[in-house]
Image (tube, rainbow, N blue to C red):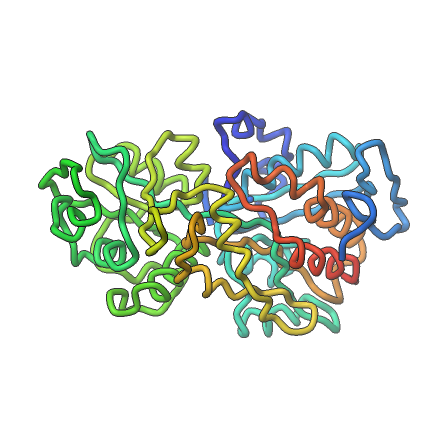
Length: 385
């Protein structure tokens, strides 16, 4: 998921967010190219470097940390890093946008203080994390919610409606023309061309792909015969690197359709599909509508892990509840984090999970964490050691 670059956040310079080639050569990665406390930002534990609260309410720490992973949260991270570094002189946070899979690899190789992933850790990834988390293990901490938009490029059509079975058939090359009867039925009165449909999917392993295919499998199991996965399993179509590549290819290809976080569509003025869920009206991909979907999420992780089950969102028929949603996680050790980077890591994560940090998400096309989940996130961050 990403912040709306249209609002100027894309214009953040690489230097402003401290993402430089020299500093992140060893980092890795989705996209090339996002207990309650009495204060908005909570509190980071003091360290030998010394924490200092300032007018922003952030309990600052000094130092430098590396992180990498999910492109879906890149724009959120850029905004948060900019705010944190402006408030906290002496702090440098380097986040390399790549992919969820690469970010987890980096983390489990000991490169990153934390990693971004659009899917929670798998059991085998948790096992691997124990090599770098002394007497502990990697945990998944939800941080950024939002819709996965299905963007399209079809001249003369600006209000396209599809449903889960039709999307599944399109992305699996079972529906290949835009004037297919199934599409026409969902779009009465719309003139649809007879041209071929060009689907675009992720080339790299991606949490965005994993979440889209969770939706297709959950909402249209008869039409999506594959298990959800970070690697694309559907037949046919063109592949592009990272969400930015998918959006760029859709933008330049007439008759195409692809998927990416909403801010990519916003930044590139790509129209997005409304989903017929059986509600009173087709549901648009918006931050508010995604929040309604994510509100049904349940914590299924154990111990400190806060992995979420979004299954109820996929089949919802509630009005204004967008069903294709994802939550990006920050991956960290519950115990055994590196002592030299732990204070800054906790301070930064405390800020982005705070009311102030989460408040930035809605205007950027993301969905803030529901209160119940946010409370658990803040408590988990406080307990990191």
